[in-house]
Image 1 (cartoon, chains in turn purple, yellow):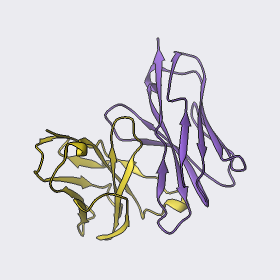
Image 2: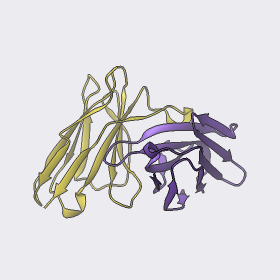
Image 3: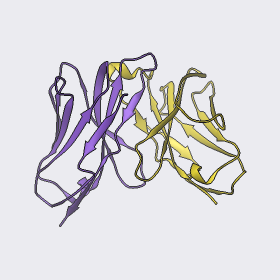
Image 4: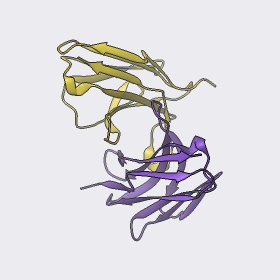
Length: 113
Length: 116
């Protein structure tokens, strides 16, 4: 069964610190992996999209990594800011007949001053 | 360029009623997807429309339906509302919706539906 699991479920860190969020997937055949940021009460916003051949992608202070062999991805946030408080969602696209996106449940990140 | 807009933003209905939600995609985008998001759950895919045709469908009962107009605007309808339908309904648009090629989806702010 195609699944995406994220850890931790929630995380609290101090402003200025770094953090890493994890995503494990069992989606096959794999097409691409995306990370989204969702502020409370708003729609998700795309941070990165990585295909099979890409193992690192950055978007400002956000760096995503992908290990297609172990089916793991991480999102590293550097020098966190209060505005980084949000849910971060990992999404994997399966190269199947429906080309659907399999969404993780997200990691809720809280940045404290 | 205007983003994805959804109307209404908030809605309160009672069990058994029906509801219609609207989504206007980014200009030039032809694919519109709908998602349901409930607390503690990931986004659940409802359906995707492209050029007025339903291209993909998630695992939701027939009470959930949608359509897309020639200007790419889309509507979603839920009939015979149940308490469990209370959720944030999100609409996303993309150029052609080919997710395997890494196309970005742009989300609207959502419609928060409360069923009493």
